[in-house]
Length: 503
Image (cartoon, rainbow, N blue to C red; front, side, top):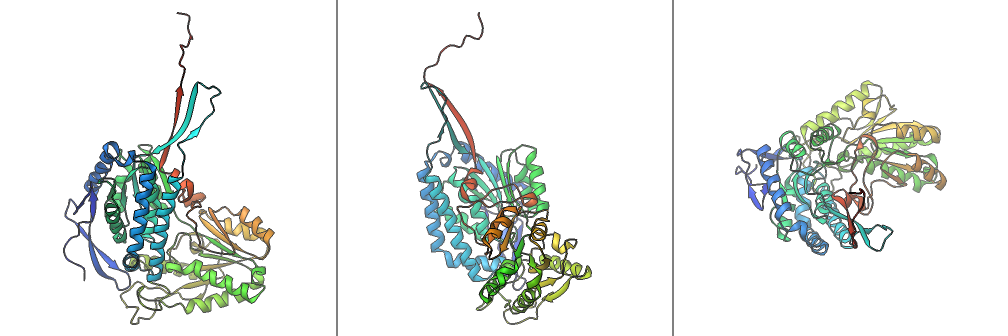
C-alpha cells in the first residue's frame, strides 16, 4: 500500500512543497491496480506560485545571463547523474508507466543522450548571424535569446523522455520553466527536478507542479506571465492548450497524436530473412509499450500477394508475446496505464468487430498468472484483419496494443491509404526496390518516415508532424530554436543626421 503521508512533490522557487489545498493523489501501479506512492495534487494556486518563481528567476536571476559554456556544463552534469541513477530511475519508470524494466532503462539512456546532445549543440554555437548592411559603418547581427518562462506539459506514456525533450533545450537556451507531468506518471519527473538541483541549477529556474490538466495545465497554458507553452499529448487537449495560449499570443509547440502507417511491399518479403525482419518490425512497431506510443505503427498496410502469409505469422507471434509485470523476468509487454485506458481499447476492438473486422489474435484480457495479477490492466496484443478506412479503429488513435490490417495492390493505392489520415506523425515503407523506397517516402505526408525500419530516432533530427499531429519541432537544431526568440541588433558606427525635412 502507499505511504499515507502526503509527499511534497511541488517544486517552486527551490523549495519542495505540499499542495496549497493539502490535496494528494495516489499513484497506481498498473500491473496490479494498487497504489504505491502519494504525490501532492496541485491546482491553480500552485501553478500561480510556480509561474511566479519562474518569472522572478528569469527577470532577476542568474540562469538567463549565464554563458552557453556554463549551461552546457550543467546539462552534461545532469546526464552524468542520470547515468549514475539509471537502474533506480528505469525501475521507477517501469512501475509508474507499466512498461518493461528494460524499456525503462533504455528510456533513461535516451534522456541522458538528450541532455548531452543539447549541451553539445548550444556549446558549438557562434555569437550570432552577421547581416551584411552594405557599409563598413554598420554592424548588423541577428542573435538568439531565451523566450522567457516556459510551461512544459508532458504525457504519461514516456514521462521522463518527453520531459527531457523539453527541459534540456529550454535550459540550454537560457529559459526558466514550470513542468507539469501527467498526473498518472509523475514520479521520474519529480526525481529529475532533484537531479537538476544537485547539478547546481539556480533556485527558481526549474519548477514543477504535480496535478491534473484541467486545473494546472489550463492555468499554465493561459497564464499571462508564461511566454511559451509546449504540450505533448492528445489532440483534444492540445486544442484546448492552443486556445488558452492564444489569448496572450504566446508561443506554442504542440506534439499531438498519430495514426501511423507501416507499408509493406511484397518484394520486401521475397527472401525468408526479409519476411522475418518485416514481421518482427511490424510487431515492434505495434506492440512496444503495449502500443501506448504516439508513433506506433498501428496500421499495417500490406501488399495483396503476401497478405495472408504475413498476417498469419504476425498473429501467431503476437499470440505468443509474454504479458506481465514489467519488472518480472522474461516479460515482453506490460499492462496499459489505467483501467480507463483499457476500457477505451476494449471499446475500439468491439466497434471494429461490429464493423466487419476479423480477429486474428488477442481481443481480450489475458488469464491471470503469478506475473499478471487479475487486478492489473492487461490486454492481449490484438490483430484485426480485413479492415478498411471507414472503421473508427483505423481512423482514430487507439493508443493500445491493437494492429489493424489493410491491403493494397498498387503503389499509388499504398500511398493513398497511408496518407488517408488526419494525422501525419510517422510512417514506414518496406521494399527491396531503392527507387520505390525513395519515391514512396517522398510522397508520404508524415513528419518521420522510416525505410526498412521502424521506431529509431536520432537526437540530431527533428521530431514533428503534419496535419493534426501538431505544430512543434522537438530534437535537432529546431528543438533548440523552439525555446528562443531572435533579435536583430543594428549598430551604426558613424551616425549622421538625417535631413528628411527642410526645417
